[in-house]
Image 1: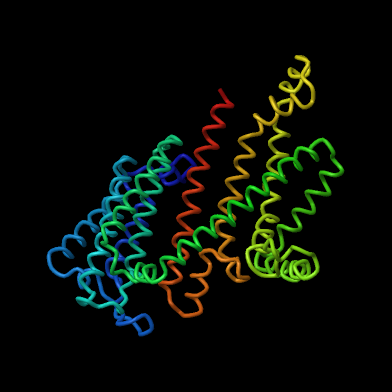
Image 2: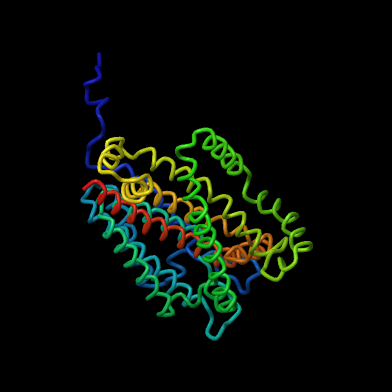
Length: 394
């Protein structure tokens, strides 16, 4: 009879990496799926091209061989640093391959054809992206190491964009037609996300400090903010249209400063309301986590309540407050996309235009920068939180 100590029930520790098996499967399916999609213009159906068709000759064979070897290598359990190099190298190879494939498929002098990455490309990116992110987590990089890796990846992307390698890709052609509006909406998107965060910190931090020792008021405020948080974001955006339209029509000067039923004002207000709960809640959690011994020591030193708050409680609660800022910023970068539905602008303008026109390239023009902003903000603020927490521990 097998027991709990038999090899059949022990954790698997062989040379095969379980995540690597998934990566290899994604790579195998991706290599046999369409790699690029060629369309004579943005509205006609496209023609699928495999990697070997998009990159005919030696280049395509070499790319398939290298990606196959990288996928098979992922199955074997190796050092995390080596796996990271494999993952990032494969992603760089894919970036070069899709650019060269798009340039090769575009007829000379053609300005209307569209070449977009197809399912196979995205499966390969997903597979090697999983390999790279898993390797980073296994390496346990320092906060500055993670930020440095992010900067290196961003620099590589910037070099590829500056080189013109991707100029024939459909999403870059959509950008070329909308460059001015793209940067205008980018500024609006960042302003909505950061502006609502700043307002939430200015209001939420003092509110959390005020209600912390007042248990009854604390319960009422927390329940109220929880109820607001349960309202779907798109519904909250819509609910603010009528009251702000009334304010614009009846309060002198309101319309002159931008308050209106549609536009940036209701979008900013909705994002601010959504941001309050994390800031207030994490402020309370941080203050609750201050050791009683620290408060007693501060009292013994003759500190006033204000001095204890500024010199003892807030510094010890800072990691929790910074975590709230991270949560809110990443959340607001995503939610700001919905602001376009009520005229608030942002990257959502391109997303919803693309949905309405069935133009996936236009959707990507709004979605990819949004994801990149949210991911970058998460990595950087995670590093800040960890550095502050280590300082407090010391």
